[in-house]
Length: 263
Image: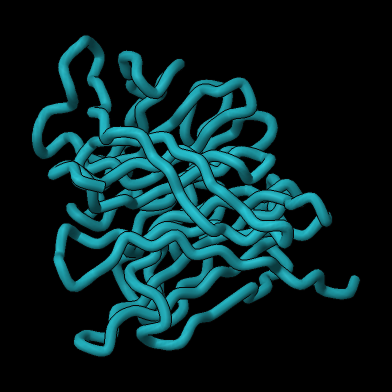
């Protein structure tokens, strides 16, 4: 896209029919677009509108250092939620081009590590939000999962951290499972990506499955994930990469179809 604001895309939400999407960048901009697909459902082209600024409470765009938007979740009624990494918080938008409403900010959010806070955001069919930070603080410390429902946050459970993989994106699929996109940086060799899924309940996450794990350098910096079901009934994972505004990284949309596992 010939737009100096294009880049840094850190989250994506695909419509249930797989035809269009909403994406946000980590500099407080958003775009909507559509996919062209062939008979097998593979993406053959992408069209997207201009990059537009996320607003604060009024007409003005989000201020610098408060616009590090990382996580994205869209409710069934179209309400949009965006999580932030630098100053950890979640904003609610009735319309993505409208003014923002701040959700309550719990004490735990105020002490999160800057540039490693709320990267992942997901919403359940009942409107419950789930978010977790990119880093947990130690390699052997689980990622804390925060939940917002009935107007308040709690932290009901954690999620096992595995080596150098960091949490960068999340979604709740049409199968009710919680999907977590993780990324590990290997220096000059590039990135590896992994998606784990879990059965989600009030008591926690269980039945862990590794849905995919890429080779080092196979994909660029995948940070956003959207989970949907195609016409054949298969689960698809659509992911987007953050180029960090570096010429040597790409803005890629990567899509996998998950082979059903036997019961």
